[in-house]
Image 1 (cartoon, helix red, strand yellow):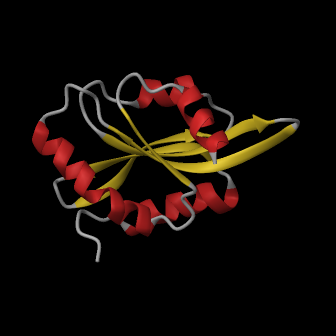
Image 2: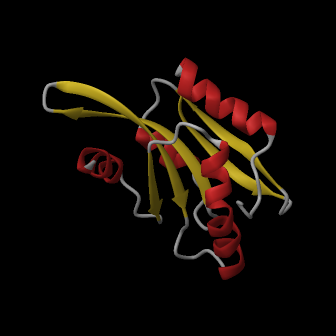
Image 3: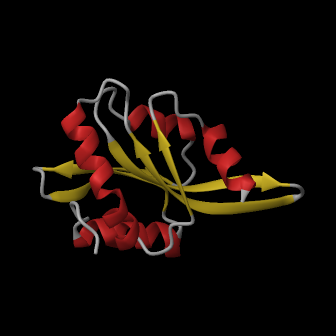
Length: 134
């Protein structure tokens, strides 16, 4: 049984739109009011990793779903990542709140192919490195 805060129905729908309809490059989620996980930003398809980084707060954690496209040999591939973004300046209470909700988020978003825990030094290469190791 998962413990932690769960995504709202709208948050799950937005994830499914990313997964099935490829509507977004990424979606940034936040915990709102210590009771719901909601969509904070939708980064449209065609936008870049720099746009995603610009949408992230400097001192607040976030869940990020990224439909990451990468090259493996001659092939172009995609993997859907769940990223737990926790800046080093985040307070311990918020770190624990997000960490304890990560498995609930993952089980709500059916189709996550990979996970990554990052801080403010998060780079696009981190996604590619993780995707190509598997």
